[in-house]
Length: 405
Image 1 (cartoon, helix red, strand yellow):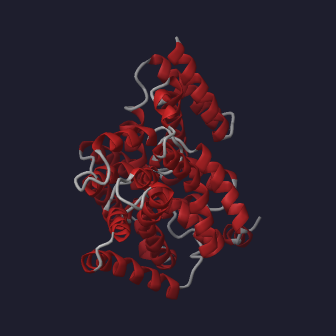
Image 2 (cartoon, helix red, strand yellow; image 1 turned 180 degrees about the horizontal axis):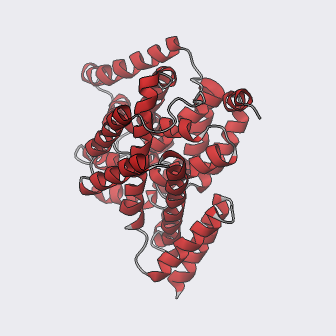
């Protein structure tokens, strides 16, 4: 197969129904939080379906690490945008988000029976499988993106820095430092073929999306002051939360708590109950917004509140990915930028390696039995090539069995 043929395959436009189906399956089975989601995505889109090559995927992950909002959801939106345009981006988001959004809204509307099983062994099994999924992603990306001593060293230093200083600023800082090191050292095959991500939209649409992002960010608080309305206040609070949070889903939770608990929209006990439920569902943690909207005291609440809060918290991610991706796809083809991306990609591997330890490992591996279950899951994924969805089911069952002992 020629390089031209390979490049054309990566750029092929896919039907929205295909994108929706793939992301819906991921939305039903992607347990373990944003870092694990990136592992599931890599296995699905790089290793299995070859929608992206390894470098293009790492570049997209690096871009989304820079943007505020849920990185894994933004990567999914970016994949959908590159493969199916705006409709593909919407299909990817709906597929990945809908299962957990429905589960969280239903929980908020009264399916409290879930609360009795949230601490069960099956939930612990889902945390353990996240260890295997992230380890597989780190293993695969390290072989491709850190094959020599300089890049491996960048990854290790990035890991140590992020573990010592676990803040969003540190994450962005090591990516910037990795880019500078890559530019200075000029290591790797930065002049080799670089497969297009495929922007999916024109620059005109991109500029319109960026303009809309900033207009809403500035205009919504003003609108709430001029036209006091609870629905508009919800849109403002959740849009602002989605716009200003760096570091992913877990970071947005305290920000949302400060938005909804002090005004009395949601009680603190109800907030914490929803936080516990959010750990038990697959997909993005930002769907916690659907739960909050459903349990709001003031109207709108219920299904209406869930939809308003869910759309508001994800809207910034849509606008930012659509606004930035067309320029990023061209910028990453510039020689100096490509050299910098060699170091950036190594730093991304370091970020994933740090996340593999904390919070993924530290929240799941407590004894030899947990380690054995994670090792078995890793072997199934890496050596036997068992589909991740099946490994998730087996680990949940394994966790339930260990919990019963």
